[in-house]
View (tube, rainbow, N blue to C red):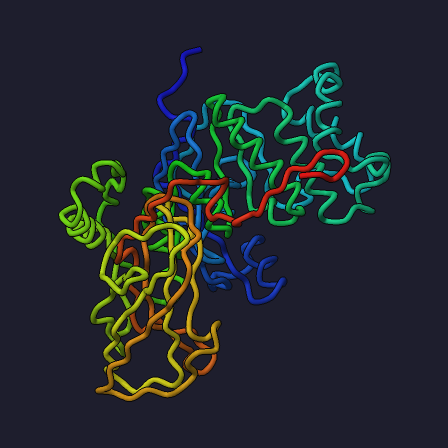
Length: 434
């Protein structure tokens, strides 16, 4: 059979629920005992379109109640849409709510066979995959105990092991990885990378924005049942953060290409640094309620010179001037450092540093300077600035300027990961002689 263009195609899908005030109202409505409307309607999904390419890893993000789990259930056939169509081309393996598809009274082995047969495998095919499933789950003799005796961590280990070892073409996961321990999560994400290399399609919901940034080719943002946007993980995460603080979302411009050649940068000198400032500015996203305004910001090297290039291991200053436009009780001044993928590497703020916990008044200007040693690996990073605070129990953004400043860390020694641990190394013989 010829493969379709998309692995998953969702067209105009809506899901409407009837919400009843009392169980008796549901009964009356189902039996048509009254003409009176006994329910209110809740639109969980509102005409959502979504196309997932074959071999693509796509993350779905959004606040609670945005429709993330609902759309996964419709794609997997657990729910039927009220309107619209869904076309899936490929064998799906889904890990949705804990407990879905498992019989709590059966032991782990029985549930492996039960789930495998539900997906369409024969008993012999499941037997061939059983060693891989048990090895991945790694729950020992508990696999012979009733599933109702499992901890949530053990349960998700077994469920995920089944889901990924039955050779799916499409893997769908709904937030389940947050239950496992860090070692199991690392194992699962390694499997994601293996699946990506094999050209399989992955669709998953997660509140872990770092995982969305790192593993997804694309992200989709849902809000109150509607698709608010789709695009690069970095762009959608920035949009999502605006939604989280109740801001009207502002779509940032396209992310510029931040790749530069270090040799060219050394030859070009200041002209490159000037250009980098312009490039960083084109990527900037700014929003807030207007109670404060970040007037300017700057990066200085260990000689106090304004620059965009910092030598690894040296001390730098990250500073901003902030105009206070309305009285604010205890504002929080912050900066964060992200890589080009949008993953937050590090950052701090005046509250975390216990550096400033005072009221400020309209008309004042504050200069905030963060001074620190830079042990990030050589490469390019984007610095964001923010002025936030709490009004009662509500977290409020006065102004944020995402990806406002480009910082290039120049290094002649890069180790593994994001930052250098500055290890002191000794090598001795068996007698303890160096």
